[in-house]
Image (cartoon, rainbow, N blue to C red; front, side, top):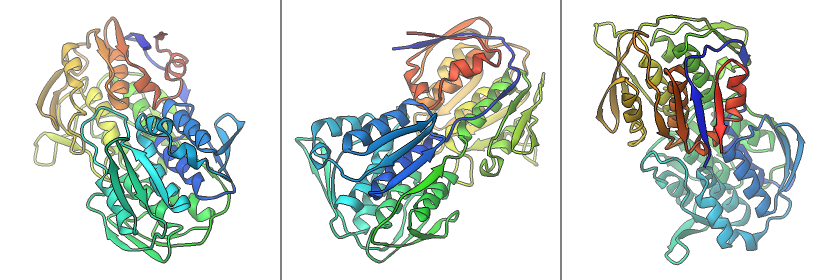
Length: 435
C-alpha cells in the first residue's frame, strides 16, 4: 500500500484546473453498453475507479480506443456473455461501487445479468433497494444465488411504468433511466435525483436517440425507443475537486485560482464555503480564492450556531462535508456538521482530534466543530484513509498542520483524485508518495 508523506505549513499559489467529474464518468461509461455504435467520451479523469470500470468494459467485450489524454472511444458491438457469467466478472464488480450501474444497461441490452454486491467506500450501509425495485417496476425479476453470492436478474421484456422512488438515489436513478430508454412504452420516475451528473447522463442518452423529458427536475418521463446510436460527450468539471481546492486554499491561507470550474453546475457549494467565512470571487468561469488570515463562521439569523447538512440536489452534496469539517477547524466560531446520508462518514474525526482540533462527535451523524481561528496550528499525525472523501480531508488537514504527517491507504484517494500530489506540489505543497 502506498502512503503520502505531507510536510505541512506550505502556502499554495497559482492556478489549477479540476479534472472531469468522477461520478458522471461512472454513469456515462455504463451507458456505452446501450448501443452497438461508437460513443466518444472526453475529459475522463485518470483515476482508479474510472480506470477499473474501463478495464471491466473491455473484459465484457467493449472495444476501447484511447484517442487522446482523457478521450476514449467505446464500441460495444458484441458483448462476451460467457464472461458476464464468470467468477472474474463478479469479482471485479465486487471491487467497484460504480459497477452497480451496469445492471440497467445490461438488462436493457441482453435481458439478463448476474451481479455481485459491489464494494467501494467504507462509509456505512449503502442499500441497493432503489436499484432493484426500479428493475422490478420495469418487469424484471431477481433471485439470490447463495453459491455465487450474487443476484440473477431476468428482464427480457422490460415495460415502461410509473414509479415513485423511496429515495432520490443518484446511482439508482441513473440505473433506472438506462434500463428504461429501451423498454417498451413510457416510464415516469418521480422523486428522481436531479444532480448535474444525472442531467449529463440524460443529455448523452438523448444525443444517442433516447426520448427523455424533464431533465433537471425530479420528474422524468422516458419514452422507450427500439435502439440507440453513437454520440460524443464531454464530462463536466468535478465539483468535489472544486470544493476540495477551495478548502485547501482557505485552511492554508493561500490565494488560488480554480480555472474552468463549471460555476453554473456547482449549485450551493460556493455558498456553503462562504457561510464559513471564506471569500470566493467569480471571474468568468474561474473561481478565485483570495488569501485570508482569518475567516469567521456565520450564525443563523436568530444568533444560533450554524448547521451545515447534506441533502439531495440542489442541496449540499454529502461528498464535501468532510472537507467543510476540516476547514471549520481553523475558522473563527462554531458549526454543527450534520451528515444525514451515511452513518460512518464522520468517524475519521478522531484523527483530527488527535491533531488538536476541537471537535465533539455527537453521534455517527453529527459533529460540532469549534474553530481555532488559526491561533493554534494542527499537529502532525499518522492516519489511514477509510474512503475517498475522508482521505482528501486528511490530506487537507496535513497540509495545514505543523510538522510532517503520514497518510496510509492512499489508494482510496487515488480512486477519486487524479495525480493529486503532483498537481498540488506544482502549487507549492510538499507531498511525497511512498510505495
